[in-house]
Image 1 (cartoon, rainbow, N blue to C red):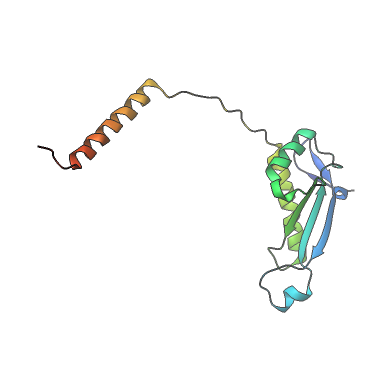
Image 2: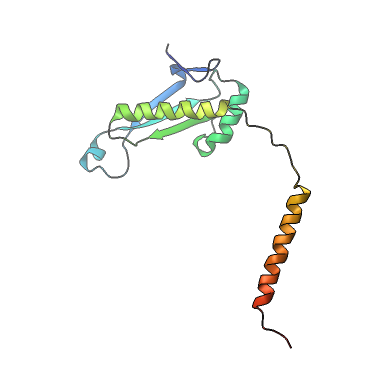
Length: 139
């Protein structure tokens, strides 16, 4: 059983990945109509060995690519070759999981400094004077 290593502590089995080959859409003429070169990769997150935190972040990142059965579906049809599309789909899955392993930095709320507030008000005053100079003079 082969494994794909996402990080030193996280890996997924090839058994968790299910691939089916479909006909690609778009231009390509007769080749597109007779050859199933596109790949539809399915990764069942519920039965995978991924940590729960990674699965939760993956749900947020993947969005519409996850169906109601908690299966991540990736379609690859960028290339005309089936092996290239297969490798592309697997690479996209690995990159998606890698991005889910990164913990987002917590934002610290900050306040505008006194000097920046002062600069903002001064620039607004200058702008108001410029606009006032454009008006028709009242005698």
